[in-house]
Length: 339
Image (cartoon, rainbow, N blue to C red; front, side, top):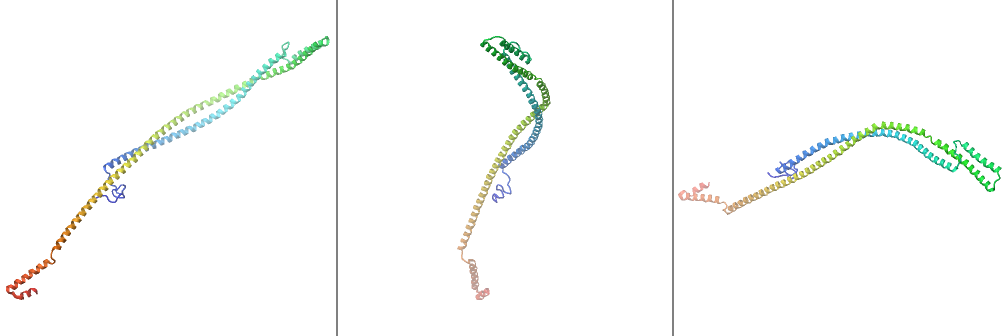
């Protein structure tokens, strides 16, 4: 009996020949096995879950790839639409510029008409208008050549002629503005181009609509997949936290079991050492008792006369011889006995 071999073998903690668990140790060991079972169950669920997450991510990547293809198609369509819009803008800008020029020319024409202060309304023909002014100048010059005038009147007539000649220059500018107004006013070609472009833009938008709907559908699926992944990752974090908690509990249980085993081992070792001590005391007592008995016997022997038994035998023999002699056997009997 007893614990032998210390901690390396036998009943010590970690020994090769493990001793049966004590009840309190077995209780902790059962808890450890239950915790391990829960961990394995959680890890198995985590493995299935990870496969599900990978499948969801694969779907998400496929959706993203499909969205990229649709976006590329839309960019191509929108690039054509942008070119059409840019072309349309050149025509609308041309129309805006023409209308602004018309407005400016109209203001200039009105101002020119007011400045010329003509006695009659201008006709559409510039030559006719210039001829009318020339006729006025001729009349003034004729009046100056045929009529006696004072110096002041003559100066007035010359100033009037000068003013009429300035009016001729204004008439030329006026008709140039009118011609410019007529040229700028023709915007029908730009309007026709705008109508053509608007039709092309409508066709582009009609081509774009199904792709936009497809992209919106794919984006909805992608957002749903993203939400699913986030939810799954949150669930995964919770399960990982549960696994970590179980591992923490498992470490605590192992530590508790090790403590109990050590305490029980120390207790058994103490009991063994106590039995060894008691056995040693008993052996010491036994040895001391045997020693005492031996000493007592030796003392008794020491008190006895040496060769007492032999001496008693000799005395008995001598007594016997003496009696023989007394009976008359003489010395011959003693000699026979001695022989």
